[in-house]
Length: 325
Image (cartoon, rainbow, N blue to C red; front, side, top):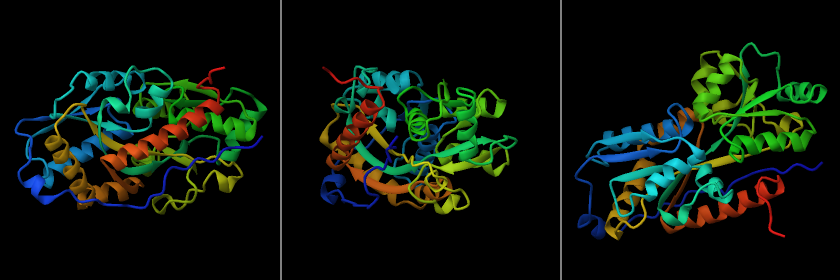
């Protein structure tokens, strides 16, 4: 059976500078800002938000307190429904990643990217397949062979059906004919805890979610689901190198409530550009194996539109989204 290789848009960077005159006379926050995270503490989005909040403060890009608030549930539906209630409020921003578009595609959320102010896409993150350090599986090929011999014996942890890790699980099955046992948790942090505790055998987190556990010798990477080896994970072969043609990456970005003014939007877009160019954010990318990518404002909306088309096609093919007859 033919497998589908996933790849997002090009990582070429285009920085569009905001007009200086508009920013000089524009709005800026004068009270604390809420930074909403759609998943629980400990996951990739949480790490992303807390790093951004620190950099924005350290670089004095935002001079008021930034409070990170986690609202997990419903694969982002809980957080984005909350954000939708804040229409016109410039004192709240939120993380956006795959679930920002995949949850509405599956009709699990009453709101979509069109309800919000899409500020910026800032980077692209890949996925790494990991097992416990004492796992009997030494390669992704070993794990797949075990699943073929005993269907449903290999337990795979993920955050929801239709999420990126779910897509990887489905694509592994399609590419190899193996039958895996997919188990749902609330966040990447919970998946890691289940993996360490022996409740699941395999997971495919973002590198930022697994880096410290791998360095500590508690998890062992089996494969990167990237098109080529990453510099920060150069000793980890890709799935394709092991004869399993499955790749996937995801964007990470920031959105604001819908209905904010042009001046408020301009402030936040300029803040995202400054953040992107800051040493602190570049260090975050390097430390966590993320690839830089910048789309701001209208360019961010165009990128999201393309991603929606991509994921709709993938999830339709996998039977997660049903086509109308």
